[in-house]
Image (tube, rainbow, N blue to C red; front, side):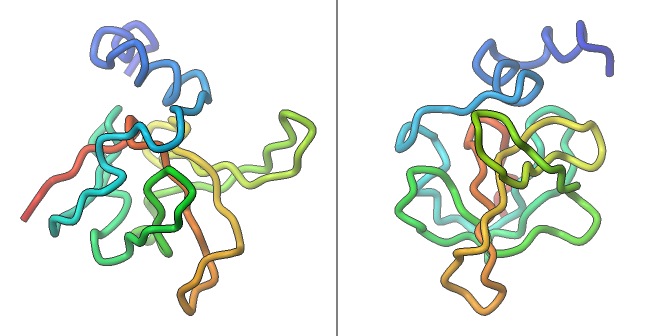
Length: 124
């Protein structure tokens, strides 16, 4: 998709986060407390990203997952805002999704901290 096509498809907030590498306000996302089974997909391109069984409540204010569907995301070093973090982007369209941290409570030790506006849930 071209940037113009992304602008036409996405809401202004989605575009700012997905394509502009922004962040939604904590505890404001529609999927934060979502419990239904299914697959979380990239809101920009529909790429399957996370299985609902990997979602957990981290208390951070954003949906958190302990693993991504293999090959669905790419990890990029992010040194913005004076911090060293790992950015998570969609492997299909390159859209920003959130960040990966190594402080998760599950055996993987991972916490994919993902913006709700970047996700659509395909419920089972």
